Image 1 (tube, rainbow, N blue to C red):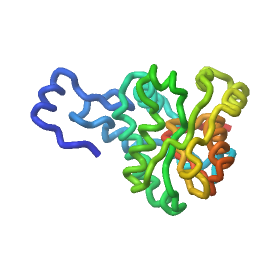
Image 2: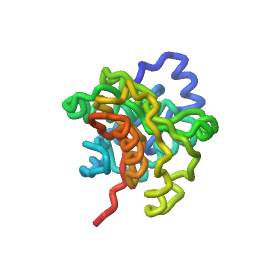
Image 3: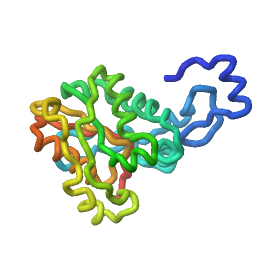
Image 4: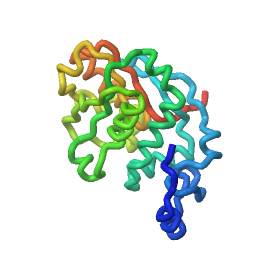
Length: 219
């Protein structure tokens, strides 16, 4: 899952050691996850999201997973998107391909927010996932309004914060297609619900959801 380190990598690693994105342990150069963390990810129980025909989620949103997601989204570590996509593919490749998706797309980010962050983490994960699955990826969605970040809102506020702000922008790539919709984390499902709704209204035949993590609320 990582390129073999070169002599230069080892020299640089002496001064700036690589660390596991999940636990912070020092690891070999060109790696982003330690062996212990790879073996201890908690499988996320099945859950459903409105407008999605199926949902694939790699793991529960634990403290260590939250650390890695934070690094990807807010600490300028876009290389973690490739790791997330690899882990998702290792667990779900056959199950995903069983549904015969035609293409992969991602939850859109408002241009202003993307400019400030430098990238859309969902887009990075989706494009890596598409390559690993042998599928094309397209920017099928657009976010037309700059809304408050979902993680800053209550569950009730999240349900209405995104209403009507996503639109499908590539009708010829959407109508009649089976589409995998990707995001980094699904919390309440409001974002994925609105994105899937836009794709369905544009004529998508099937929409499946893929994410890296989902917080599981105890009964």
